[in-house]
Each structure stands twice: as C-alpha cells, then as structure tokens.
Image (cartoon, one colour):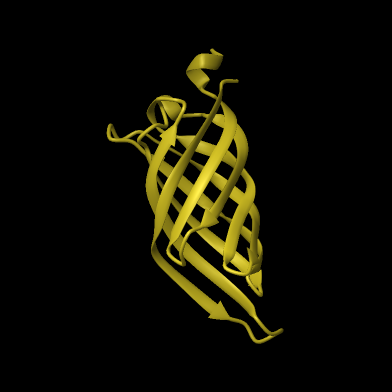
Length: 142
C-alpha cells in the first residue's frame, strides 16, 4: 500500500450548536467544513475536501465523528469516515483521530485504506489539519 500525507486549511460553511440540559456545558455541534488539500501524493494535491462532523462536547472536550469527500477538478471523488477526539484547553482547541476510505469514483472506485489526523481550530470558524495514511487502488492491486 502506498503511504501518503497532507494537510488542509478549512473554513466552516455552516455550523449549529445545541446546548443540552442534562449536565452543565454539554453541547452537540454539527458543522460542514471545506478547504483545499495539499499532499505528497499528486492524486490528492489540490483536491478539495468537504467534511461534515458531529461533536459531543462537555466543556469543549469530547468525541467527533463524521464523513468527508475529496473532489478533484476532473470530477473524480473519494470519500470516507472519521472519528476522534476534540480537546479544549483555554483558547486551544485540538482535534485528533482516525479516518478510513469508504469509496470513490473513476480511478478511486474500490479504494481501500486508512490513516490518522491531527489538527487545531485557529478560530471558531477555521481549522488547520494534517493527516497521513496508506491506500490501495483496485487497479494497482490487480
């Protein structure tokens, strides 16, 4: 399996937070974040990622899970899932977890692979993320 790494800077297109009434400072957050990818692998460099995440936070710390899609100028796409942890310490919000491919179109049809991500919120609307992992294309496996 080829290994690869990358990063992106994204901005929330929308987000909604609901304050829950069970314990103080418990919130659920849903957001759509998008931005351009930079990668060591040309197949992902300049792809545009959009991800949709749901966070379950208590005083700013908790779990995160969701879905993402990478779209390229030629129309090819790949997508998958992620899950991880959000940690808030003062003004610093960090994100860390795992991701896995679930599918794709064109040369990415049947893609498999997984990896890890780490990031931080640079503002309530902006995120910087780095990731790494490995993948296998069906064509390469044949």
